[in-house]
Length: 115
Image 1: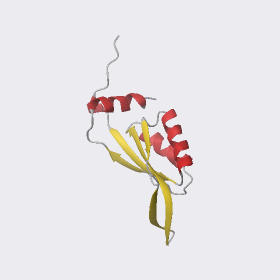
Image 2 (image 1 turned 180 degrees about the vertical axis):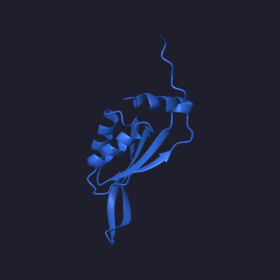
Image 3 (image 1 turned 120 degrees about the vertical axis):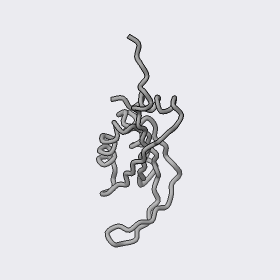
Image 4 (image 1 turned 45 degrees about the vertical axis):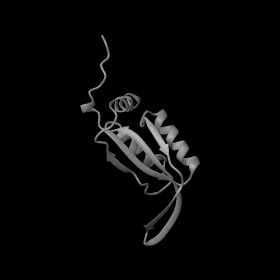
């Protein structure tokens, strides 16, 4: 029996955004998510300065942004893992549906996130 590639119509790629307080914690989370197959790829971006209101007070922090590529099937477990591994009381976890992309890349993403 020959394995068939999944139909791209059934692959919903998802981009998840979060920020970590430093490079070391971001690298640890990235390695964990990929090794657990919760993400096919994680990009760590250059540190940025974040400004936000927290508990009625203006806060600022230097953070490392993360771009996490996964599928909608893996998203619930990914969200739970981020929440468990993240040092913040209320981590930023934003899910963005990907509406298109290079078919071969989307197939790879799906294959790399198979449980």
